[in-house]
Length: 201
Image 1 (tube, rainbow, N blue to C red):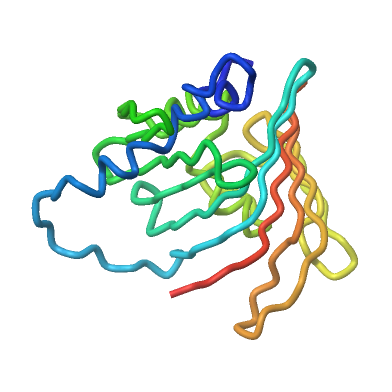
Image 2 (image 1 turned 30 degrees about the vertical axis):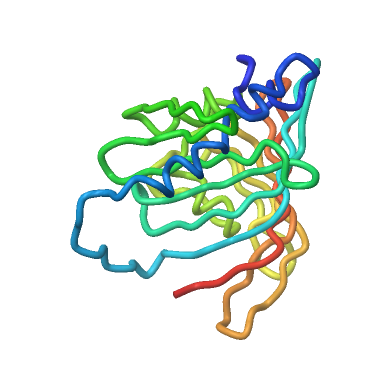
């Protein structure tokens, strides 16, 4: 697993890298972007807050996150550690993906999956994440294995070389059933997602 920019921030040698994903929040706040027409909010849009943990055979980290998802290419994901340290943000605007690092540096990628690899040190199909987060298989990727539980909720999924286990489903007032815990593994990498709070436009 490549050394992630975010994880560097929490290792002893990188308060600068801890900072390598959030000081530019202040920088970004001072820059006035060119005016653009507002984007319509799609039916799949959501905001979710929770906890994230990433671990491999040698190291790991955990953080809080908030993810604002408009559509497959327009999103903002912010993560931070204990006491708000190492706050960083990944923004996609349909043309590029920009990583705002805690040390004030800004990194730009054209590919969202490459940006997440550099940021968190994991290879993951970003387009699949909105579906996995909601306990669904990604419709544009082949499903290698799929299991549902007694309630009909997706319990286990193998897709895009990842194996995911879903648990703790609850029924929302709007009729959605969403998992409270998602554990994704690929070789020696383990990612645990604990979505805590959802809102849908």
